[in-house]
Length: 154
Image (cartoon, rainbow, N blue to C red):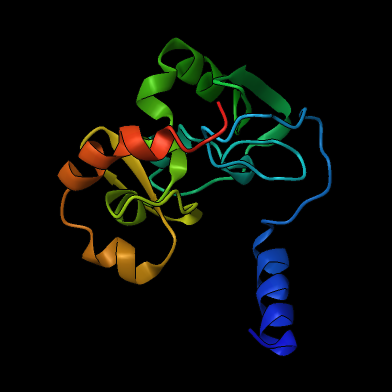
């Protein structure tokens, strides 16, 4: 990858707000959920409940956080935090936020919080629009997930 390509990639990440300095969260030691490497906040600070209730990715607030599964999670409202804490396994992304297409191929590739699909009662994050658009079903990823998950730091 050229220096110019790396700079474009970094600029894009900054524009999307995916690169952030330390916020209120404690960096997690777990890779179980896709998290911002600088702050330790799961889903780069996006509210996992909003994908279901609002149908879109919404940034959570720094002052409305919860700890679960070794990660800090942010929410747009107290109601969303309460909903998450009452059933975190419902709202947390499938495969910890790793791309289901990559998981099906045996690799833990982080999904992007803006490239998502809610299908049934599951939230899926993807690493590219093409993978999101071609995603048919989760059976292959479901079968491969235990092996992929074993590669992650608990």
